[in-house]
Length: 309
Image (tube, rainbow, N blue to C red; front, side):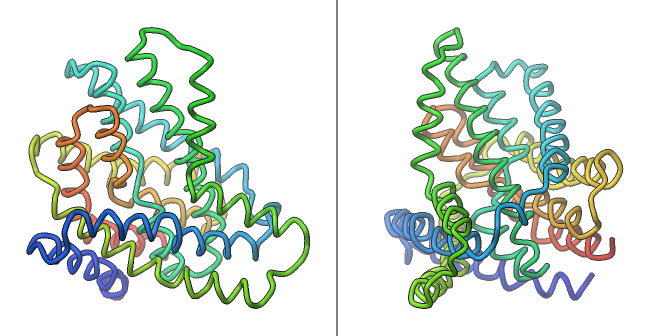
């Protein structure tokens, strides 16, 4: 377990470095915004494109894995939703809290860390987890917010969802990569080298950007942040484990990867959603900050456990 902790520590050390740069003002919020854009639209997209272009969709696709992750995630989404409604939060805040409870930082933290710690075979399962989060749960919150705002469900919402997915560089890069893979033509060496070089900036850039963005986060509503962090760091991997090991049994390695992915802290894009809809951004901010701090320990424990499966 100590060995796993020491392997994860450099990732969190880079996050801490970014946090320090942000807190001291050396790295301004504007600089953080531009670094995040570079990672999101260029470096991480290049990494995901190269991964998917060198794989086959048929080899990566695992319907049982998708169902297991979706079952465990939906269960905790439901728990967080019920608890929020019982606290009288209303649909808009309930939807945001449920998103915090299940959407982890898979793109910026999970992709680089899990692939390095668990091997390149983790690429496929991690991509499927990322796809479920982006396609299903990101679409779900748009639908719920639309119903809450308009008081009804309109078919036009699917146009909004579709445009949103087409504008997401992670979805686009994965899709383009698998499309290239389907041709059966290997990536030309210059393109592969270009994507490798650009993608290499994704890991340190993403981790530093996470830390720098945390520097502007507050810890208001700490009791809610602790509850949402408990959902994300403990309940989410626990119920994904139940699904992946007993309900929809997977091979130990695939089960371990999606359990580890489920243990990641709350994603920064939930904060962007909260800001976009004007719903409890400070609450989400606190959940991201608290869950990221606690995950230094919990992620190591989960990865250590699943490595023994």
